Image (cartoon, rainbow, N blue to C red):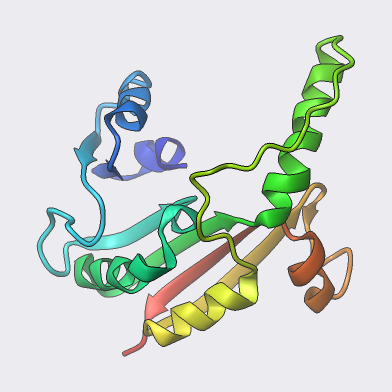
Length: 180
């Protein structure tokens, strides 16, 4: 995601606690991206540093006991009126969506092999949208926009929101700002 937006912005930081993920980013050869090996709550940036912070497929890797310190770090580095974009996948993605897409990829490549569900052991905090909404509110974030996704795109257009959130949403994205 940050690779896609890097050409639009003057400076983009990729922050990840693992060198392997940062090295993958380096191979893309984007000149205005700085790679930082770090993790919340110990982010090496001053207070009110960023206009926008994107947390793309991160929260599901953070143990519940560390979520509060994670959001404290985000609040610290985000400028007043800055944008916080958070995206995460759900249990449904791990169990159904990912294997289905892998199976479809196999079929398109001429291999008729059904992909099996394998739990991602690094996903320690999968949640549904209502859970993250509650956490964001508790952590002083106001959600301005949200999108729920399933296999065919946005789930809201296909079924009632309450049903989509609980039973078929595989990925969701919230655009937030801090409460003033």
